[in-house]
Image (cartoon, rainbow, N blue to C red; front, side, top):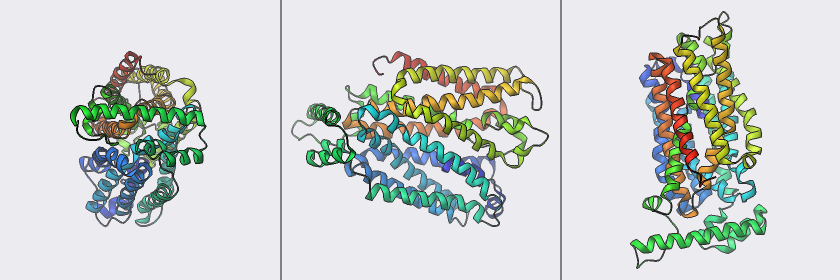
Length: 447
């Protein structure tokens, strides 16, 4: 939800009156600082998840996130607001990757795709909620107009923390990994997982214990195997290929440009450029120029499109196949980005007339639909799915760190490219998407 409220909030009149107008550089750092802090927090997420257990680690990270959100909502100056965003980012990094690992571990193999892609669907819903909450509060008098979105987000975070700490069961895979087989059986029963499915899970975890023991005995022959993997374990010969692929693809998931598409621009002077990269179809009616007054409303409409297209993709995640979905999505995303870049390079996109702008607007919506139904789900399910149990938490926390660093790069470089040369933004994202697609095509061993 933070992604869709931070842009609107920081350009609200009440916010700028209280904290002053921020330069583009300061504003960019303020908005995107959460990403680097999340990447930093993710470095510790895997270790915490292995030691504390999945729900406890998620609850801890979400608690840190909540503290940051409280500081933002109560900010008295811009420094306090910035500190709140930094703390929020660290908490985000601590819990988000572990959340994905947890869902993957409690899901039976036959339902793992739809269940593991659930957070992606909820993220889309939160984007929609954030856009329209900000739209609804903009006319409230006083600082409550910009504080209220953060207050609502804080309330949701508190509910999430309590749910993890008091309602969610421990991961049965984590329990098996820690040799608590009786507790694991009770959790499987509570989750109503069939005996044949839990046998698959148990056999997989038991087999991986042997791998861990072999790896650790080679370096520490006099010590008993430990259930917690070290960072070095991620790069052992048996697992380093899987670790690299998760880090690579989750990073390129951002380099395809999806967050540049969703980021709500706020400058009327850049109406057309941001209409393409921020989904602002109101530019179809330039005389009314409603988008200049409320640039985030149309971005909310784009988020609704993503939610609608995510429903069938989530339900049929296991039917379409990870590799096929990723390859088809990569081809479609690359083609759309190159098409839009070519139209801009050929000066075929005019601000108030012509077929070129219609082609670009339609292409942007198609891009969001393709991304939401393919890469947005297949890569996020596939990355934790291919990891062995003993390194899954740490590998995915590292992979999401890569994702957030790449996200920061996109947030930083996209406005610069649009200012200097709009086609270059599309060609950059299209090129990155093509590289990831070609790479995935060569990995035939991972389906």
